Image (cartoon, rainbow, N blue to C red; front, top):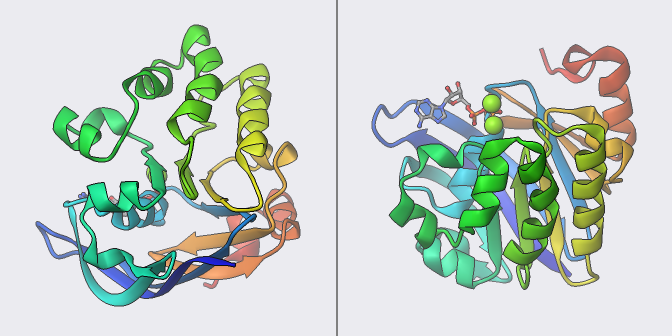
Length: 217
Ligand code: ADP
Ligand code: MG
Ligand code: MG
C-alpha cells in the first residue's frame, strides 16, 4: 500500500530564498527499502529536513501525502506522531528544543556524533529503539564514519526494522552500505532533483562509473 507520495516538491531556504529542492517526485510503498544517493551538496539532507518540516526551509510548490494525509499541513511534531521518523546527518547543529520536537533520541545522537567505537556499537541498538513504531524511517548517512563491523551492525539493524507495513528511506553517499542492504529502489539526486530512479543495479552502475555515469548533465 502507498505510504508516501511526493509530487513536484520545491523548497527554498527560508532566510535567503535560495532554491534547494526543484520539483522532487518520490513514491514509497509499505515494505520497501529505498536509497537516495548523490554527490555532496545535491540536496539529500535538505529533502529529508523538508519532509520532517524543518523551519529552515519554505515549501514553494508540490504535494506530499503521507498515509493519505497532507504532510505539508502538519507541524514537525504531528509528522512524527503520524509515523515519520527522521534522523539528521548533522544533528549537532540543531538546538535541543527542536530535537525534542522532532522526536530524536539523545542517545542516538551521541552515538551518531561520537564516531568512537562505543558510539558505533550503540548506534545500531539505539537506532532500533528510536524508530520503534515509525512507519517511515528516513536515515541520513547513518553509515558515515563507521568501520566495517559497525557498518554490518547498522545494516543488520536496518534490515531488521523492515516489516510488511513500514518503509525505510536511506540516504547514503557510500555504496558500501548497499553491500549489506538491498533497496528495492535507488534514486539519484542532483541539484535538488531526483534525476534517476532504478533498482539496486543503479548503485552498481554508480560503483563502476561514479556519479558521472548516472548524471543528467
Ligand atoms: P547533501 O545532503 O546532498 O550533501 P544538502 O541538502 O546538505 O546536500 O545541501 C544541498 C545544497 O543546499 C548545498 O548547496 C547546501 O549548501 C545548500 N543548503 C541546504 N541547506 C542550507 C541552509 N540552511 N543554509 C544554506 N545553504 C543550505
Ligand atoms: Mg552533504
Ligand atoms: Mg547530507
